[in-house]
Image 1: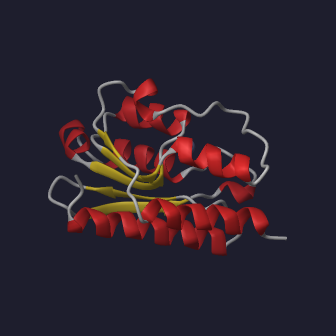
Image 2: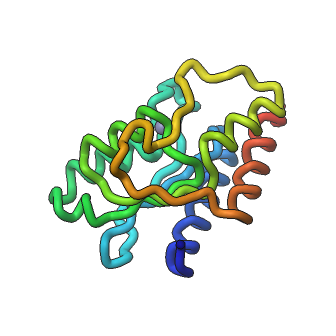
Length: 159
Ligand SMILES: [Zn+2]
């Protein structure tokens, strides 16, 4: 279950996804939160530059590796607008971060993109726990997932 403070972090992720969209990027946003609830870092997708590895969850994993002890990482939570892709799930697992809470799942995203007629991405879509089996993962969050869907629809309907 997610509490009110956690819902606020998820709403911030959706806001960051919207910021990405407004700057011409794919709508994904993520927030890294410490065990005591402090926001440590946040980011949104930056793949419009041409580097398609610039996902916010990957950036947060690398930030955590550079700035947090293993104990702090294990106790932290990553909130994100969309479930981690396999690359980001692996990075999260390798640096030993804790729980993940996502607003919308990869399965939802795949179905939304299929509805829009968008071709499948070159990297397979998998649930986070197919990559990091022992991780605590929560989501999707009803209400917020629909907001994320609308951002993806806007991104793909842009001229
Ligand atoms: Zn990713």
